Length: 601
Image 1 (cartoon, rainbow, N blue to C red):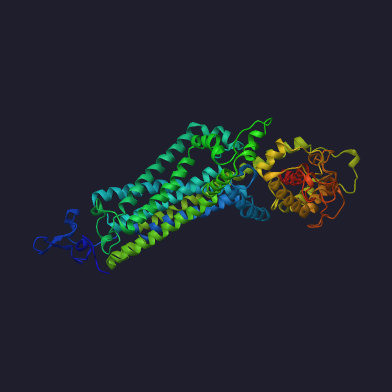
Image 2 (cartoon, rainbow, N blue to C red; image 1 turned 135 degrees about the vertical axis):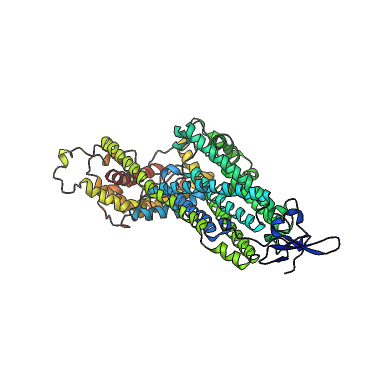
């Protein structure tokens, strides 16, 4: 490939090897002369050949690159693991429908699998959370250090274009690691939803916690500024011309940007600006609380809006009266917003961010080594001291895994013990059985009850339908239920959403009726457990009869009666729907299984 451009002579290999002499040409009479390679600086750029490239294993060695790439890759996997298994329990619900869909079809099955393998997904998620944060802090400081060192050599004129591009690539991986950690922090530990206890956790407002957050934001902002400047420098129009990687990076400062390098620079800056802009904002609790309380309800939806229960029209009247075209425009905007605000999109975007970095470092190293002499190339590929150190430093974060697991395991056991004490106090599990039950042939002890509950709980919670938020609000505020076995009359879009939920609930209930019945038969004689189930006159009698009957208890062996044999539905809809009080009764049966398992374990 011919060497072209204004500085083609400098990019050509016009030097004596292995002697430290380079060729220069007098621009006036085209007379060639030699100078010592050590005397070359950017004032000679254009009419003297750039010196041969020397190896920099501290920057571009295989061990160094492996350490940075491996750290980013492990953080990627750990982040996905953390979000898949740690953001599905009841304390960490989401308002984003895309994330809810992902959790229902990916996270919930994964958590159920871990339960069947006798693993605690919440405990594993906390350990993964600690690992992500450790890797992030390590890479944040390392990335800023390598950028500062690279900038120093850039302005001194002692770093080649190739090695400066590798510095930029390594800093890119550091930023990728830190972005992953910020996603995990804001998703798992820093919720500002009104209904989330983390919002009101005083520990988030103490000075040390706020100082740590501010220090991270400062380091992050510094890294962003340095990396954006490095990307800007790499937009030189002829940076990928053959031979340019051998020349000092300083010589391209001030030269015009353009072509593919400029396009690549813009893409990189846009990606960095988008991801870091979002993450920096998400790191500010004050900004997120203002958004959640005052902006989101106006632009997106009403899920964060406070309302007066005596005036339900404040929530539902807008939906009933607003212009149809405007409502469709808002729905389209919400769809776009939900996608870009979802954890799913962020994960996919950061995976693309990581892949982009892999491609860049592979291409830059290939081009750089094509400009090196063989002995320099061999030196840069050899695993020497400076390359082994960063590899072995990777062991440090993983050593902390054992301490993290032990610490969270102790906390989990203490929490379970506290729950057991509270449960024993409220349900009087530890008291002797009533005299009328002594000698009963069907009485089960607590261990037997726990055995059954442990077996059926994963099946009961598998794919359990979730009542949509707007439907739940309507049922709480506006619906009038006179017959617990009948549905309320609901029209419009809320009625359609309720009907869809009712059908899925009935299907799920019928599929697990034998499990509810098994829990009842095994645990109803345990002192206090029966009082948890709402089986009084305020519940659907047909459902109560199904749960407490002596029917089959094998999986799939329920009668499937449900409301199909009840006394009708309001509004003339199908008899397969489930009333809200019936929902409470069946969910309480599932709660019994969960309470018993938690109490014993």
